[in-house]
Length: 207
Image 1 (cartoon, helix red, strand yellow):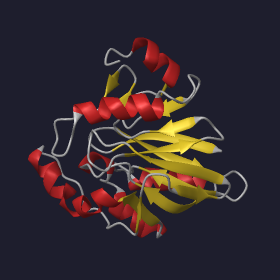
Image 2: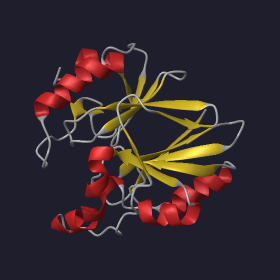
Image 3: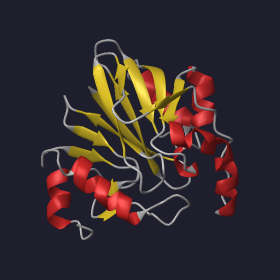
Image 4: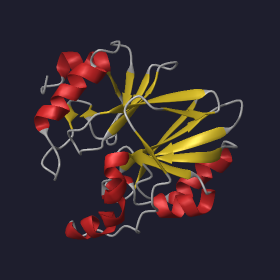
């Protein structure tokens, strides 16, 4: 599996490119901005973006969505409870004194337990509300990889003071749905460096 991480948008959101080495099909997760740079990485690696997956509909994770959709024609995927929030994210950005382009609408919604496929890569969707009502994580069991949006960070957790957030739900979801995986699983968050389940169990002050 090809996994490329790059910081995008005004809040340096981690965008991930997942590619199948054989078929050269790819998914882009959370294009926070810099669609041109994302395209450069796709082209450089000979990848064709088939799917754009949004872990949650906050403006800093979708700033490059419209441009990337236009450039690739890929399907936009989001949890069903966040679909209607996408059109409002440019307005939300303005409340923080920032500008992002109106996001492209979702083409497809997912629920807990759905499996998204890119070539031979299977990404299991788990619903992990807390940071937002429709936050999801992507579990790639063959690689022991979790892409978790703004749920769990290295040494911290996501904010829960936005509308629809819940600190109790966030902590509960990390404990039940992430910490039950092996300590050697890698966690790729929406901001900051990657970590492991084992490291966060031992040193994260929220647990």
